[in-house]
Image (cartoon, rainbow, N blue to C red; front, side):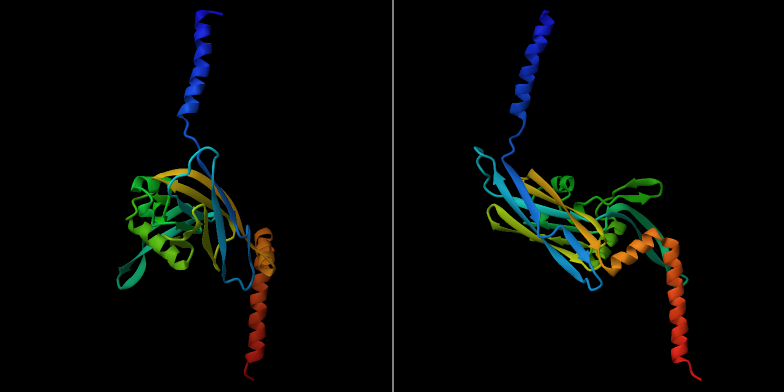
Length: 262
């Protein structure tokens, strides 16, 4: 073996040892579960709650930290929305400007053990998307795409409308520690919640850094007659439209026959 080859063989294990020593030890890990993985929407569905449980497990031989915080974010299926600004023109309110929000969560809930401002500096919160204001809401502005400053009037209005509808929710004390290692949070699912897969992400925080992360999912599904109608509209669109038109026509004829005056 040449001298150059021997040097290379010595360098490889030395580099491996250096990387192992430089890599941070994972002192804790999260274990998370939810009270149910399926929310069924029926004709009388007015909303429900899903409880998220979690525990912090320490690795052997690694001392635990003095305190922990947890941030839980639930994101519904991505959709595209249009926010419009109205203006008064010749005494009539009309749509003047609009902004398109692309692939944003149709449902968004953020629960933290303390107010987000107390969990770390603003850059840290934005980087880890802790808090509704720190989520990414990509917009189409002319021919450009991207997020804007939190004070953007369209962004502010969009968040206000979604929160008033109950589809965006934030609770700065929504995560409760039952013991120093066990926590829970309640996620409200409103009656108008869209169907699809909801991603649940939990971040374990300490000392202004993320030390563990865990994810799970919830399915929101229609069932019964509502699911039958939704499937028919999706798979047999033309027949569904014709049946709806005939039903409306028949209802009108029946009402005219019942309430006509001779």
